[in-house]
Length: 357
Image (cartoon, rainbow, N blue to C red):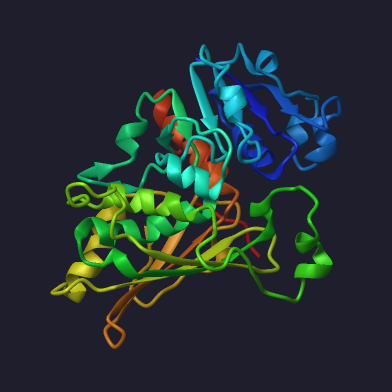
């Protein structure tokens, strides 16, 4: 069976990456691409690297244009997907690459995003450990999927094995991320101009204001087998200091995350937690002891590569994880989740091989 696909936000970075991956997918046909201000223009004018899709023209984004497809991908700015998802009730599978359907807490949505709250969908990070299983099981047969925030899924994958196994204390997580500007989208912003970022590293959303913090807490709460105490919120006791730093590379995230070692946890038990969680995974790989990834190793690939260190002097575990924010961080996770939902081979159209140099 060939599935018909529409992709909204097709002139942007996330939409373009979804299209790049789907262009090599043997089970889908990309029939419709949409945009807002760029509607009416050839797709190739905005995505000149997608030569096989040069025949497509960007249509205006509307429920009527998106309806009638087997699968709809929404790659829109945060807060804009909900107006369309409400109108796509008859579409068999809808995948939102924005934040509109990620959060379970209305309070978190109001604090970090604002605007209308929409019901949470199945979270699109298949390898994420959740109590007693993997998120993959929840994606089987799903009709509505929320693709992750790139920073959020990187940090969550980094630490969820330790939280699930009880070998780290999630009450004092510190994570610092070097991130490329493509994660902020294509919209023109002064702080993203080449003259502003070349030769410089720039922190942003410092002091607990980044929108991915509640998404991380939510994911780690799902990984915690024991759950929260009676009467507490699900993410009670999970505290995160989260600092992203914009660096001059177009793609990539390098997240360095640390957490205290839980009392009594041995070095063997700590490493075993990550080996057990990811030993059989294709797209999330723990490197040998003493080895740590580079963002260059994952560019263009649907892989999250991570290295783990046990710092007994500081009594902390350090996990360094590299992803391509546009692939494993967004579009690759969305397509991987689509494959699982439809019962296709999970790795269809996805690769573990990066592009180098």
